[in-house]
Amino acid sequence: MQTELPEVATPTEPKVWKKVNSITIAFGHGMSTTPLQTAVGAAALMNGGRLMPPTFLPRTEEQAAAVATQVLNPQTSEDMRYSVDVVRCVGACGGRGVQGGGSADTARNPSPGSAGGDDGTGRYALMVRKLLERRGAYPGTARRLGLEGLVRMTVTVDADGSILDTEIERSSGFRELDQAALASARDVSGLPPPPERPAPEGS
Image (cartoon, rainbow, N blue to C red; front, side):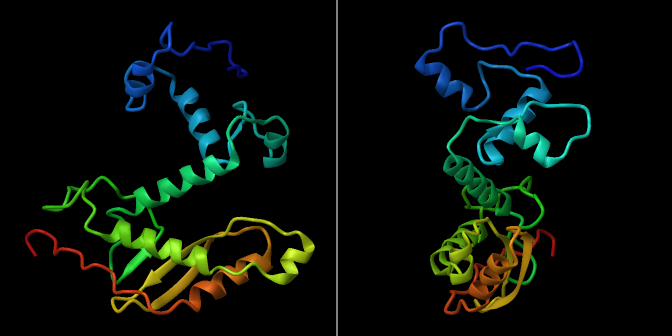
């Protein structure tokens, strides 16, 4: 990996890659990389599987895309983003109802009797997301024009399972797709009530 600076460290990795290396490296043992190398690799997982050479100089998104190399299947990248969304919701879906999406806040103490601190809100948010994806309608106008894009929304669910609010977190780049996604979410009915969060200790 080259940058504008001459100092480039080489990642430490096994000389002979064995099955056990794949297992241990999966949880952080047996390989070491610099923070920049880690960031570049993680970015490729999240941005559609495109590996972009890093730079310390300003550049546009178009310039970065022009020098990118496709190293992963885009669907794999989408699956990774999906997993991250679910993880960041565990412990971050609070307040009145549940929000699918929000600020990262996963470093909370596990709730008694729960797996990994998930009191059910993470699983509930995942269920809501899958339901919205199944019910989503692809607008006829967008289909005829060949418009494609990914819409990321924040959906707030009330304590009785009704949709309180929907908001575009990241636009698809096309108004038709954004509006169709919002309309599909607002039309959803029949959701079960979200799980109750345990009262904070000392309250």
